[in-house]
Image (cartoon, rainbow, N blue to C red; front, side, top):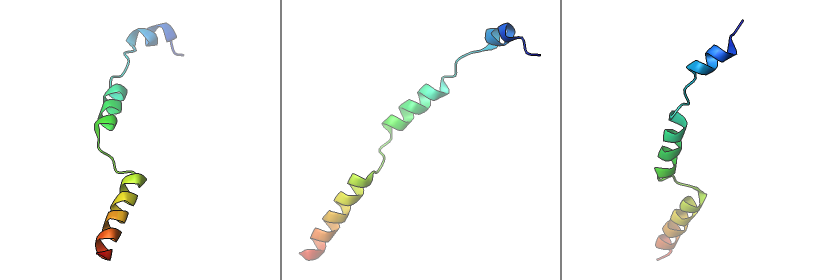
Length: 48
């Protein structure tokens, strides 16, 4: 059986979650608004 007290002593919080969170926030991701803006821009250029 597991000794929870011993397991808790071994536990160290992971910094990976915080690092991943920061990396995701710093990434420039394309969303639907960006796609629609680009489509409108292309459409307007074709009309000229």
